[in-house]
Length: 174
Image 1 (cartoon, rainbow, N blue to C red):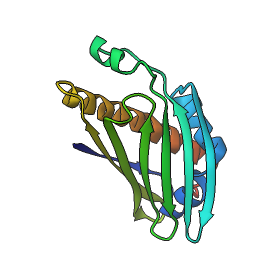
Image 2: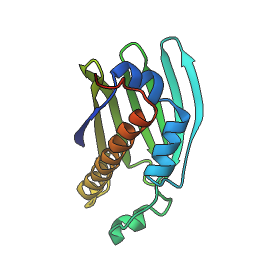
Image 3: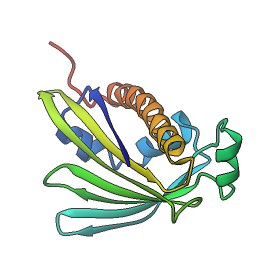
Image 4: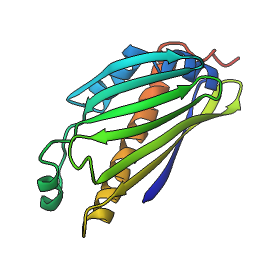
């Protein structure tokens, strides 16, 4: 199993991120369909259970250039279901991903949380974990998934800070 920590500073408070951005439908469609060019992204189910929000998302990222060995393994496509739980009190989102391809040989999970960096900014941290059980290709698959995730999170961070500014979610500097 490999793990990667991906961090970016957002120009809003942690409270604003969790209450006005993270679950916002327009924001999520903008990131996944607009910025990251997914073929599809949608919330399948969303259910409040006490202080937690449980949701299932179906998504299909575009398949970029892949080595032949990986392309053959992914004949079911890159689509996946994300099963996530947002603990509102702790401001933490834990997720597991069930891919269409290699579902029995690929475990993907992660945890997203924020750390305040001042009154109007926070550090968003995503810890991604990937374990592939494919003889001879496990390391290649794990590295590729983590690399793709990191690239996506870089784009998402830039998009998020533009979104924050455009929507006026951070008070102007004095």
